[in-house]
Image (cartoon, rainbow, N blue to C red; front, side, top):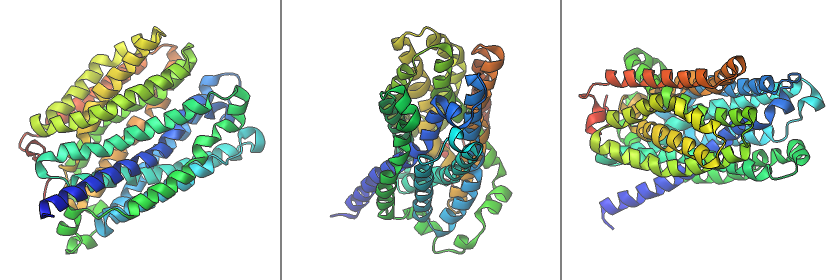
Length: 434
């Protein structure tokens, strides 16, 4: 077999293993977001007779996981940039699997009082640290092994795992919600969390058998750069790139979590069937799995900035129509809202994001740079977006303030795109070098 065939076969194995590993990890992480919207409020955060306040408490715990993510980015960016991408990814999946399994064993507020939400938040912090180190490594295992002219397409497969993880978590809750309400609230909700013990074993086995990134082995592992302090170096030498990565992240992450997590809470508060929204989210995310690859492929042809702008500008245009369609309570129109918001607007950004962000940093600090930019922005966008959206809805009893928030997210990201000059590496589709 020729060397080219060997590389192609190896890349194929990396793609399959990375998608499966990412999907399993993000399944664990997204379970909390679904449960926070549906049942964690009354189980762990009782707040009198107002269900919105209980849900806000659950979303506050959701936000804590995002606050912990930059810490995970620093820790695992350090490991990934010095010791290799694979080692970091095995550790993150192990942490995520254990934390998620333990959530399924937690007693509720009624059983142990305030110890219940305290333990839930602690485990959510562990999940946050793990996920903060996950994304950058998953992206780099693909982009650093891909041909230079197809980086966008292959890097997009890392986001396919994110979509698959959400579909799996939504499907798990969709199925257990078919139980009688009393059974679902007492023990049925625990099943998706306890199932993570199987996921943990499969995922760790897959990741332990992945080859290391060729680019890391060629450019870093045998050089003095492997002994550096990546977090300090990236902040000292590449602060603009970190800020650009944060700006790119804002609309993608904030919009995504409004469409995913808040939409389910919004449905519950406005009388729309959560089953309709859950099934709509699953349909939209399945379509987005294919659209992500399309947008990544297109970014290799017409440029990252152009494709990313399609997503950020359409988020601004679609902010109000999304809620207008949701308010019809017609299943087909609800599906349309979710499909326009996720596969089109969100998909254009998330499909292009891995290659575009990676090309902002040189190899020896790329894991850390990706993780810092990606995860610091996730605090404000993904972590607090559902909480702020719920608070705005509680205050105004209307969705228009949330739509305005979506428009602001889109505007910031669009302005960020203007700071990335055409002469930067993203236009050529080649990663930056030291």
